[in-house]
Amino acid sequence: MDAALAYLHFASIMLLTAFLVSELCLCTPRLRLEQVPMLARLDLLYLVAAIAVLASGALRVFVTGKGPGFYLSNPVFYIKLALFLAIGLVSISPTVQFLRWRRALNTGEQPVLEAGDIRTARRYILLELALLAFVPLMAVLMARGIGLQR
Figure (cartoon, rainbow, N blue to C red):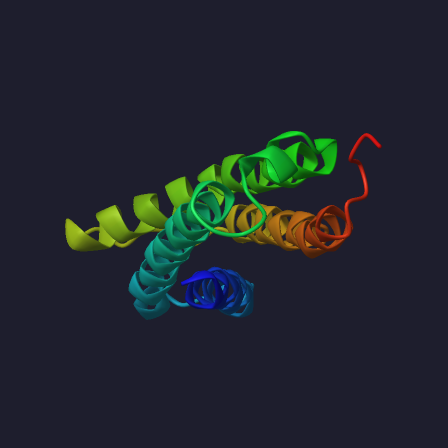
């Protein structure tokens, strides 16, 4: 059970990263209107992957793994959670923009894909990826007991 849950957690993290990188690759100054639905779909898949990461991580903390005492007493665990929360908060702005564009398309409007809006969404995605790069570092530190009171 522990190995399967660890695998699910790692696979979810990889999917989350893949969806976020895919968003970055699509959200460029060359973004076309017909690509907006795909961008919104990728963002939805990113949300699903984030939920899977949280759910599998919570199960690892409370059901398998090293037990809640190990994780909940380690400040590095809270840094990892804070990073994940920050990524989620940063992701709100691009999500809102993608939904705004998609909603306009669904109502028959021709939304203007302004360069400034695309640039802003892209910057937020880059920030999400930069923050995400530190999550595995926190996991490695935490797994080695760094941060635990001895």
